Image (cartoon, rainbow, N blue to C red; front, side, top):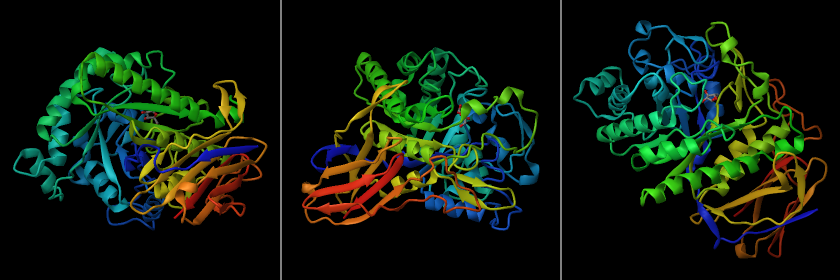
Length: 498
Ligand code: AHR
């Protein structure tokens, strides 16, 4: 089967917001403790951050990292995590039925972000707390000095403001599992009041209102309509969360997950624009897909049944090659919506449904899903091109007819670099990619890689990092303005021209 598309810099979707390559660190399971932070670890720095994990995070390249939750934030007192370590209280984390030591808090997290070369994205607690605590935290982080909270930050060693620009107004407050769940109207009012006050503290902040926890929620889209009717004029983005469970679905359906994300983004954009039209507003909100990933969620019994414990393993899913193709396809979907998706955070970064795994006291390693993220974050730059693939479809139970090829391309007008990202969703046959690249006369093919394996269930372990990795695709050619390559079944592919 052949898949054709056209690469032309004249036809663009929008600029690639670098924040599309975000990630997420929650105080959950072993994401923070024995994930990014483990003072006794042989590679730990003076603050207790694991150097081996920092190296992998730099290689992965997340541009922004959301923190500290997630469900955790809805019961969190941020003041517990500042000041001398020995004075920090031990608390019950009601979200994950854990004992929280508070050895990592906002100052440590911001310092870790600087070391990792990424930007912090903070969430405030609008589950059990409100306007006062949110503005106090913002004042602590961003006010230069001369007030009680900002001087306390300075006393804690951060002379310069943390300058956190992006703030989530709570987390998943539509969910019955959320501590402090609200009705859409209650939350919309609280988000509006909080946003209004936060803008008084620092007018430069960008604020994210909570959208639906996933697109199967019974209130999906109506939640956003009610929430945004209250806070549209004072927020910049509305969030969308979506996870894809491979269990109980065919491989073909799993590989079509991007279609579901695509429809969910369209639905939220339509809903936000409808509210904007009703309000006769000139504002256009971005969509912050600030939790997305493959998650073997049906393996998890849920938090209610957990015994109390500290930093125990939670949802440490092991990903295979098929999951990497799905993650690649989800990244392609996000890029194809670059005109409206402003931020996206893969959930999560370390151990908890994550591209990076660790052993306490032991090694850190890449999972299969590390590779598509790292390659997209490194190479998808500039403008997203409208490539309009033409290819045969296959039938899926969840989404009907789905194209065998999922693809996008980016072009950086500054460097001239062109990157094609492509997933072959076929479970049994290669695809012949045939791209018209005449508009890029003078370019050379500088790299073509494929991530695939004879057994799509192949996973990576600390001991066998090389079991799969992106490897050169020897079939790729650029000749007479045609870019061609054979894409193996269930594969993630990157073709780069300069
Ligand atoms: O990422 C795991 C959890 O999934 C987050 O805490 C929550 O926001 C979502 O339901």
